[in-house]
Length: 312
Image (cartoon, rainbow, N blue to C red; front, side, top):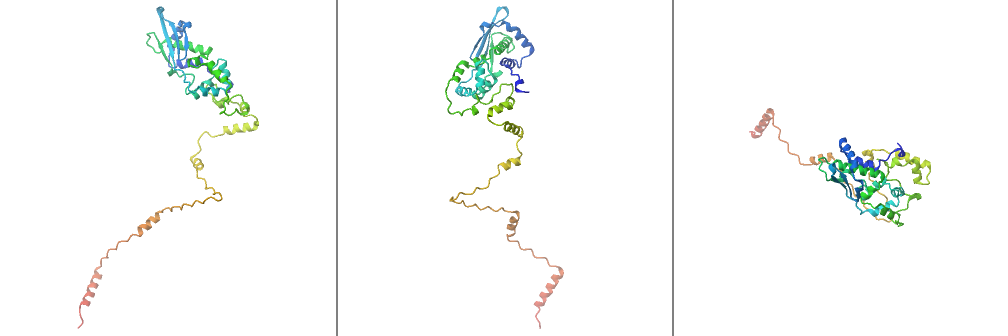
């Protein structure tokens, strides 16, 4: 599927999905029935909260609210500097749209995305219904989702972002001397934060866009580079190849006039045969005398008698 065929999910649909992820159909139907009872003039969207009043049974009024913490502003200057090099994002914000790329850019710089997780949104209602969230809270979620489809910039208001103030700082003609100029005179950085749902850089940039970003490079060169990247293996090299990559390099020749470093003599390895030789050098035990046979004993006795008898 091409990048142009991918349909981006609107902010309203994303909000609706997160708010109703674990809610059954019966409770959703009750919330839709309660939606007309919201007193729209009393809907108030402020930084960190959404509040409204709903008419209940017998003319009672319920106060309903959603709360979420605002985004930290400690890295706002970094965000402004990056937006100065992101022409398409700035144009979208200037037209009241909040592109997915801006959401991902905020998450990378600030530490959390512009679009909140469902668990970070708390709620309250003055009714005494047992289910949580009640149908009044779900109706307020649905109301805000519909408003986001018409006014997506209200999400920035809810997270504590002054859109006009942000755009004013981005348009200031301050030079970022520590940042390199954009390559080939392109109007913005390459697309690192695509807008499509679950899209990445490879799904966004076509061959023509790659050629535009790289500038005066031949078509054959760009196609060859893309083909080589596509042929890269997805698995790590085998251990043998990794071991060859970290093998010690031969010693380089010393420069003329430099003092020679004496070579360290290698320590000879001790073989198993040498250990056996060491055992042979130990003094051997004397062998035990062999026991005489009977004939040898008789012959020895006769010789002893002969020596003891003196001649006459």
